Amino acid sequence: MSVKGSLHVMAMNIAANGTVDFALRALQLLFAIIVMGTDGYAIHVFRGHTVYEHFEYGNFYVYYGVPDAWGFLMFCAAWTFLGVIFLLIAGISFADHTLIGYIRVAVEAVALLSWLAGFVAVAVNIGSNACPAEENRCGSVKAATVFGAFEWLLFVITTTRTIKLVFTSTRRPKTSKPRTSTTSPATSI
Image 1 (cartoon, rainbow, N blue to C red):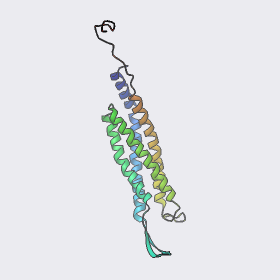
Image 2 (tube, rainbow, N blue to C red):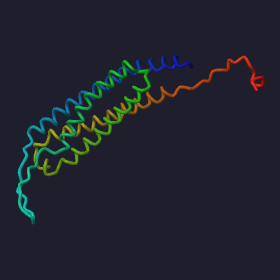
Image 3 (cartoon, rainbow, N blue to C red):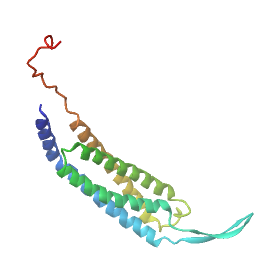
Image 4 (cartoon, rainbow, N blue to C red):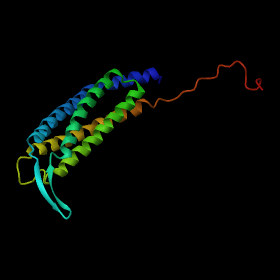
């Protein structure tokens, strides 16, 4: 099969799976919006507190603010918004460019790993001093964690699909051209 033929087959596969890819990307955007809303609300209503600490060398006041993990989860949602828009545009407009394919894989991998780190960090934070288990005010953080886990699962699916698409389409068989020389190898010596 020629390179042009393989590009045509790849374009047909993208068109056949376009609905599934679009649905997965739409879910990723929807879940990112939900995480932004729930995590943003949790950050907004969080009441920082000051604690008087007594140490051997002196006393001081420590202010405990919003946990960093909550802010990182918000970053993951914002990154997803930008990344998914890039992935949609790159998947439609530049489907046959090898370099764009590798960039797509890198964007997918960064998003996948950041969502894993984000939802795990917030999940570990639930039940701690910042979000005590006996209080019900942390429900929005729990919802953000659950949707962050679902977002990670969506990125597992789309990253796997993108890796398969990019690395199977860039492995084209290399064919050598026959020699068109008019002289035989024996006469050229």
